[in-house]
Length: 383
Image (cartoon, rainbow, N blue to C red; front, side):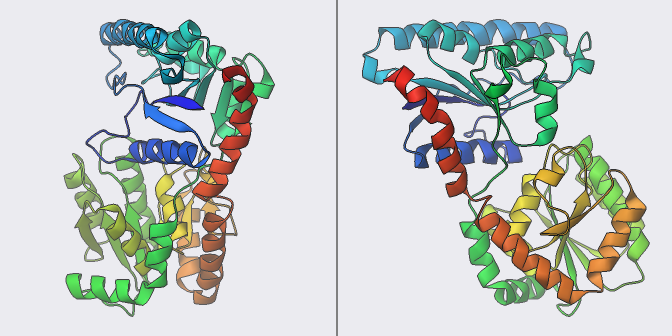
């Protein structure tokens, strides 16, 4: 099929790196591997950060007008040039899909949404316009692909049929991370030499954007957590940058002085090398949807320690590729860090399990096969 792909929060061509941009690209790649022709329908961004109802209404009008124009253009095109299916990634109250429902209805094609989210508590709030728009999109969807069990709960009251809600677990292209894992010692030596690190100590790795909100809250929780294990030898390596870098540096510097090396923003291959060189990935995941970075760490063979927040258990299976503390329990989180810091044999066992997990059931090829099977139901409609 020919698929029109759209990401209202952040296009895969957006200039700022993020997990959303990476996942959008992975979905396009997986759809291509499933045998479909995937084209980016639009780069229009519907995101409203501040809860401005007038801005949301303006974005709604712009988005719906763009959807109508696209449908009109495709309607005049030769049948072979029209999309057979519309695929939207990540629609929620701050970034609703104003294009897909109308364009799909006008063209008479299936409308599919991956990672839609709905919370009734948003009704009547500062993002009510976006909240209602997302509700309409969920109701219109012929298929809702959910990366986590947490998302499914909020969709059941809106979906036209429970059968339209299906699981598509988080996945990744593990190749660069496996390649880095295969040269772990070299990666470790290079980092030690470049930053004057003591390679005999365990290294803890974090790769995250430094921005206000949940990311900053996670860094603050990380600082408090690691402050409880200062009696053990270890080093924290942090990759990332952003507007809240000063606050991140201050929080970590106060809680664990002399223990942190900041690496700045790194390209994907260097992030893979960082994970491969590390002994543990530790991330509190405050309000994290699920956390692609933790899946990437496991793909490099690094056990993850996090909290069982929202969709995190769908990325880190407790006791397999990592350990999970109860959500928000920093004392328990610190206890798990201590447990793995002193047990190298358990770290190695979890490292092997993490590699197998990401190379198998969470690989992009596995996701492509699942997408191919799920979308096959629409192939007769588009033929």
